[in-house]
Length: 207
Image 1 (cartoon, helix red, strand yellow):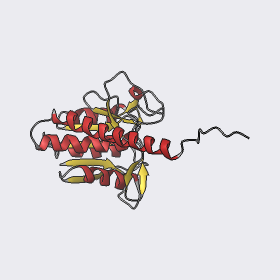
Image 2 (spheres, rainbow, N blue to C red; image 1 turned 120 degrees about the vertical axis):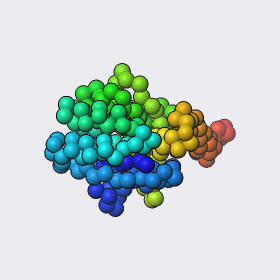
Image 3 (tube, rainbow, N blue to C red; image 1 turned 180 degrees about the vertical axis):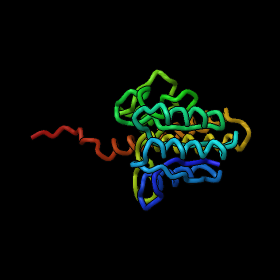
């Protein structure tokens, strides 16, 4: 099971996009858990605490957002990490992730976004904690392109759930590397085609 912690599932909402990305990359069941942007700290903690009794060792929790650091919510995530894998987005506001929740929580899996050339996007938050880097730029969802570390976190959570279903979490590294390589290869092909199409005419013209 993948538990998606996010806002209301409405058309084109952040949570609906994350849900679709996860669904596109795994056959594991997904359960949406509502956490609204205007929720109180107490409400957020209670929602996360309610998962502690539900999450099993083979489950994945995906949290594709960050919030100002809060000790109470941190503690809820600490308890949740003891129950299952918790995947969180690095964030894309050029801030220190060590001052944000849940990225500063020990034991969470932090995922940052690469551009199509395989380079971390410029606005990525920063941290000394190891980060899993996944291509997350202009990812096609329906008729829209989505970008950011939330996209990358959703993709990573999907691949991690697949690896856990196969009984070998180490497989996720190969899944991610293959995905990143595929994106880079497609980008290289696009750049070659663009160069050919827009190559200037270098023939000399004499009067």
